[in-house]
Amino acid sequence: MSKVTVKFEYEKETKNSVRYQEVPAEGQAPIMGSLYVQKWFAGSSKTLEITVEKKD
Figure 1 (spheres, one colour):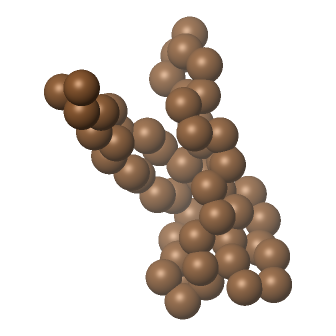
Figure 2 (figure 1 turned 90 degrees about the vertical axis):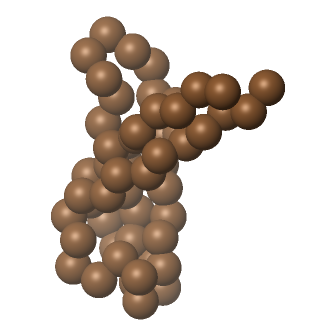
């Protein structure tokens, strides 16, 4: 198993959600790219972190 924490920064608001753009680690390609989160959950957060666990 492999875990990685992916960081996202606020990009823009849409009608019902907030779009965040991944901040890739130095020298690495993005893992997820953009992330849409519902406004009721995102609130006024400017950054998010998501932990992804890969199971073999």
